[in-house]
Length: 545
Ligand code: ATP
Ligand code: MG
View 1 (tube, protein in one colour):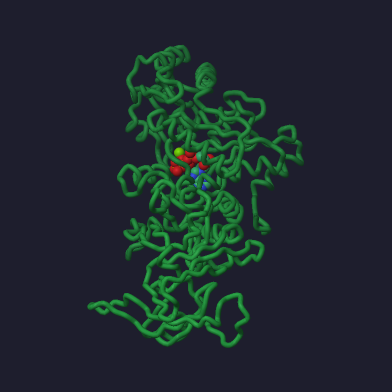
View 2 (cartoon, rainbow, N blue to C red):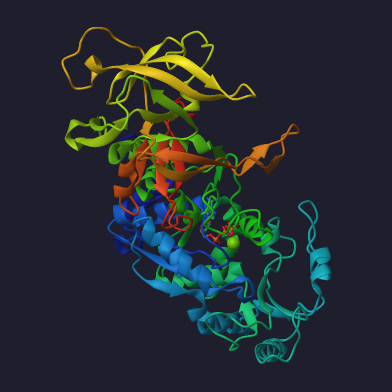
């Protein structure tokens, strides 16, 4: 993990709370996703923040599903979220569901009604909107605002009993229709929804609203610091109102931080679900998706994601982080952990004219830059492949790879010089005829002359055909600066790999020498042909400022 100093204003708040002896010196946080989709990298930031904050202060962190909206929620999402949190390397104290508190929430609502702080309102959604007022004008009181406590208790109970259709009534807090904060203008607390809930089935046909449910969930669990994103800042007075009016002894404190936004992608479960439903991507775990399932399949490591979340810090102002920083963290992590293989992405045939026909020798090639990683044996023969990008018939200035008459080192093997270029009838280069110098074998005593270029290659006879999927950003900017789907977000290569790729472990990431970092896509690979995913290329598009 990087040893930079990260700003975290939330930890400053907690330090102060602890110094003042608040909450009996404890820190209890929670990560509260709604199970209405797969988690994305933005959620990873919230997960890291909540869990590492608890760790830092010897506290606890719950995973709590905020499952108060039955229509959009599903157990598939619950399971994926648990998997994602574990994959990131965190273990929750308790696994909880907001729906387990529906009875308590109902009692809290009844308590508010009895205290004259809540009422049943029959206005339609449009009317409520019209009555709400604007930022500059106060709202108007509902004609149902002054119903008696008895009538409200009766109506609320009948709402619960299923006597009224969806949308016909809501329970509202009675606060202040003239409040400068629109959230305080008699907000909705409960709505009617005749829907089957993934946990509670048909037990309930009324469901609490987020602003009512969330503070109660926090209070029930004894959460001390309820960390959420900035858009809830204006809801904090309502959060505090609910806690106060429903009477909790140790009020949790809501603290807001800025959402993570990343360039060239979108982070909202709703939007990502639309991509999946439209077939724009191949499922939630498509390697182009910014979902945790997607980046996991892409080959990103949990260490890299945690490092990224720490480096971006925790801020109070919204900003957009360059995707290049996440890729940088992935490279930093993988460069320490991977072995190198030679893979030719776009093959051109090489014939080594002076190498004996039918002969194969094994040359020793280093597994990585670290001597302790050792070497492997790679077959070399008269028939090889090199990458098309490593040849130029007419070289540009500073090009040190293959061109007619030029000598280069074939990694781990010999110096070869390109003698002749074979073309098809359309003028496309189909084969390079080369000669090798037997004196120049790598690891030997040869010190005669130097070459400027080293290129990778594979032996044609033993090469393993592999498909390589190189993914690019899901979104790009069009001429008007709008984010649109990138039509070239996937490039497929039919590549040749040295035989030792078959020895890699199932989940073992590796470097394809001079190309980037790769992982086998278990979903797409077949018995006969492995499919590799490019995790990230080698060049860094991100410069340290
Ligand atoms: P989405 O719009 O993608 O559904 P959400 O905020 O509605 O996001 P929740 O499941 O309610 O998703 O979020 C769980 C937690 O993750 C919340 O505390 C939320 O604030 C946090 N979170 C969601 N998106 C981000 C983000 N981009 N950056 C940081 N935290 C986020
Ligand atoms: Mg949400």
